[in-house]
Image 1 (cartoon, rainbow, N blue to C red):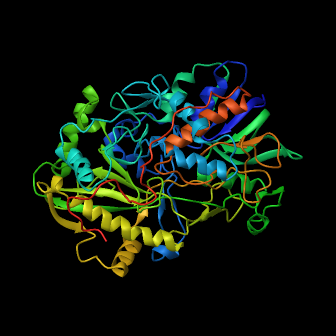
Image 2 (image 1 turned 45 degrees about the horizontal axis):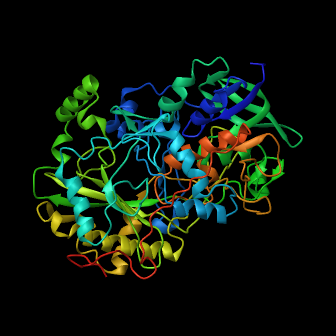
Length: 564
């Protein structure tokens, strides 16, 4: 393919599909979208309840793992990343969390000018069609369908968890993606009409008929091609052949927090020690490439359920067959949800302005592969701190584009990250101990009531904590004078021309929540920047903050206090 394109986008994931749609929309520019994987047309991707299957498939998952992590007993932690159209939005848990307004003010403070809450909220709104329609905070006509799945219908455990949160003294919020993130309430997901709403389905498929948009699958990008300090194309492998593709205007990396820094490093952009160690001649020294890696950790807090209302009896093959058949015929029932239909965001202590602990509630005691972890009935909450201070890195070990990178998250290397886990465990026990859960709460399965002291909690967390799969920050946005920054506020790679990065790697800090929604927002906003369009008018609304946040951890007193 010798014809140059105006824009080459590398990676058809959560950001790349958005960019492909927006950059090609007016027909003035030719756009080439490259993807290393293949098609996303698979029933196990489209059916929300089947989320564990594409996650476990090397067809749709790069299957990365970290190096042995010192902070978690030298365990190697799984780092799944999507491979195929839609990227990780085609294999993730579909949880839709924008983050807190404080996240984006934090980005501005880190040097990302123009990325404050007022600047970003209009792009969140532009992206989505919210099931309850548009308001000051939510969008009603965007490409991305967002819903509550089955909206907690049919299982009393969802509401019991929310009620328990209220009894523990926390706020109840109707919409954590709207006015008030803090508190307990229904959870939202990227599901529309009972089907997974990946960015491929929401953004790419409607654009495929455009004459100025070309999509190439099974393209493994090796490196960026330069003329001096200007990016003019990419070198790649396609169906066993080496190819070079040319860009008249820009090359845009949207390969994600793991792959984007890898491509930059293979192109000679990054810390010189890393480049020379991999046998690559430096083209442009940029110390921050691959650094600043952040992620969320979580544990499964499990209990037996005294009533036969959990999903544990629906995990056998015959029940799954019936669930699947109903979904195929009607796109309804248990197949049409990720089952995380209630949730919470709480502050770990007084003096915190925004919630730093996140809960996903699941009315089953199960493993991530979808199999039951106990006999009988149970339920679990996924809980973890969502603003870690530890930082890691992604580095290449060789120039081979097919080689896996060296990933080191450095989990729990900051003392504050260890201390907050103790609060997570104790506050969770207190929430589940409230009267609203009395009719359902059986024995604590894990951690187990014997895990009570600081030392025991620390040990159990090290042994059991897992990634929540939210890597970001490895090409962080900042001011050009910041030696750790990789891109500026316009997503340009600092010191180079014709090259941008647009994906979760540019987050200066990880948001208070899951990262798919803010990744989509970043791509929406970046598209206007790339096309030199006037930015959407800043929002004039403000989020909710607890009046007494400086002095109180929560608004009220728990009906039963057990937390230290």
